[in-house]
Image 1 (cartoon, rainbow, N blue to C red):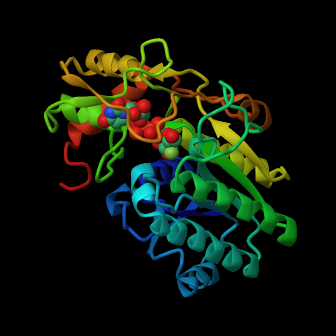
Image 2 (cartoon, rainbow, N blue to C red; image 1 turned 90 degrees about the horizontal axis):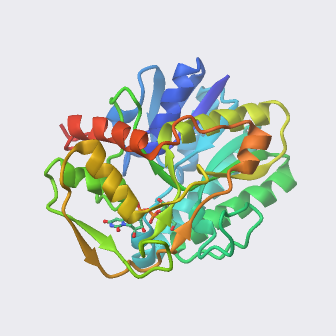
Length: 329
Ligand code: UFG
């Protein structure tokens, strides 16, 4: 079985490509390397550099490679940037997916697993969040991901395509080998920023908001190991291969940790003081985001293997301490 991983040089894409190679699949990675890293593409995967919006590139790829299914990670994903530059997000995330779907249907490729996000829910109405809960995104990033889900829904109905949309909560950690990990520029995510403080690259962490309606006043999130996310894509592919119908699944551990709890865990794991200062709320942050992962467990048979926060941070720390400059060296 040949799998095309679009955006397979990025953080979650590269971890998924690696798990697919380990599972013995034939893996083709395509990435424009605008935010991804060639060094993150696993040995054993064939690589193509190109942009999703380039129809000739995609048509050429589908004509050269016999692809059975696609996993689609190729999207911009910074919430703050999406608010400042919404058209960049509409252009890449939506136009790219439109071109992809028309090329896939023309080449009779009928299965796709798609990376969506908890950002589609906006401010949640219930905790834990169910897939059927209201979706009211608070930013263009979440809006474009929700619109992409709808594009899959309507295309599936019209063209017989089957898709699985995976709504990730807070992806974190790194492959246990220490060979690949999280490297964004600029970095905006909590755990890598804490680890940049631990390895001396940053002076301190700003804790954004200490007056939320949560037990310690800081935001609560559901942190899920990137290798567990990668495993969920393989489960989703197997589900589609087995005749499963198009569907949407949350991916989280179902346990929430506050920013202060993550800070304390990072201090314990690294043994470093990690100076922190209280700062105003960051715009657009919901107080609590915790998944119900029940549906993914019961329908896909997916079970996170590394739910422990300290183990997750410890895997991330192995990568960050060995690669303080990410993939730059
Ligand atoms: N935080 C800090 N200081 C920092 C960075 C983050 O206090 O320097 C806090 C944030 O305010 C938030 C928590 O740490 O409360 C987690 O923040 P991240 O930036 O790591 O992750 P988000 O929860 O903002 O992002 C996640 C997903 C996005 C998704 C978003 C939906 O990574 O894909 O949830 O709100 F869009």
